[in-house]
Length: 288
Ligand SMILES: [Zn+2]
Image (tube, rainbow, N blue to C red; front, top):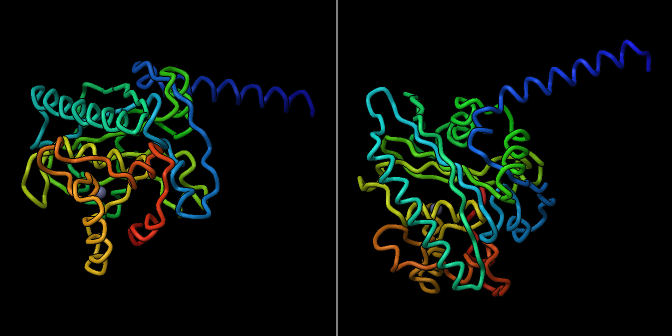
């Protein structure tokens, strides 16, 4: 290699290092540190259990939660505080359910006090920009790439896993953007931060966000399946799940969370149990 080329590469590296440092300041300020493993190739439904940034419900999990309002519907400080309390209650419930299966999980929470204002928040998972929206939010806060997020989170918190929760101050249908089988197969989900959108008001029921809903969506990121019917053709599967696991939080997430549980199949999917039953595969929701 000629010396001028070497010099150019060195210059490029210095530029990159400088720009990375400048762009990561907002994350650095959170004091986060974490380690993201490359997911394995996905061949069967079982392989989905351990992919993504939230892989199994044990160990230390970093939770980055963010608030988004609109010009006409902003979060008040009291509402932010009340919502954070709901999140902590959902985490406590997940911790005690994990303990029932003999596993220990700890959540390390990080947030940004300043809410983001966006008048174009998608209000359901079927909107074209819905899946990528949490990343849009992260970018608006200054984040520029998945690799950067993983590196910084790994280095600072000691967490091996992380998830991002976005709380919009509008009504909508909550959803989780987890790495799916197609993404994992193609490698496109390799470094995707797994995220949930948790709306202040449910557009289906008109109810305020509940603790059970937060826990339900978080479980999706660790690999859990819905047990309610996801389409009119999906009724038989849902009825079978309701027979087997009537108290499952993946069947019903509203009401008193203490009346809900992590059922044995969900426990298996989120890595709390290794006990596999032959009917598990039958209860897998139809794949897109
Ligand atoms: Zn669900």
